[in-house]
Length: 337
Image (cartoon, rainbow, N blue to C red; front, side, top):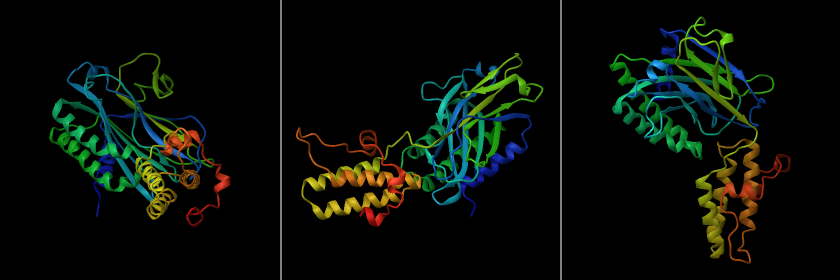
């Protein structure tokens, strides 16, 4: 049975392959590659803009719908979809920059496929639909990402409602960009993908560059609609927010303080089991975080001043630091428990 995400992917691919307006696109690599299972990726909308003639219309604004297909959580073809529009109160024309398209995802190897469409949105009706979709998608921006499979279909179905509205009005995206980013011998290369609704004559290769996510153009020429997507790769996470785990840490500490030994053991086992099987983390980081959390739970006490120790994963990483990967390489759940 075809899922809503797959249907949306097929529709956007058709737009891309049959676009009436030519497309100039380029990928600019920047930074060190990351090998499979050794780091994380995150996609950003670095910049988007309608052409100058549309930016002058105060009742219209740019929006972007994006889908990413990659290996995640044991599935080689997970499709994540979202739609981005200006924040409430800032719906007018202009350039939009630095908006996350995905959460931080462990890179599990293989190809990362992107589909990004720049929309020319008019009126409050379309905006209301987009707001509804963003509300459903917001839960994906905070771990655990195991909820992706359950929510991704709803998000894709919601985006299709906007597409159907566009079809009814005889509209199409201003531009649609599709690209497969394949890993090289050293891993997946971070960088910037730029797409513009223009011909090579309108925007020759030497007339523009992409620097730090910004489209820089020289030599003048007619304004064009464009977007720039950033593929960020990192060996270490910069976001350790795990609300569900933080709640379990607090409950386990409380049970220990109250002398509820059996409940503490159950909460401890539940938490450590979740960490060592978490789709959010690379294999090394699962063991590193599990070791850190275990040591915190087993050593929890009230300090002399009565103040509690760090009670969230983010606090633990900031104050204690993660153990080296080599020190926990052979650590498994049985040893943790």
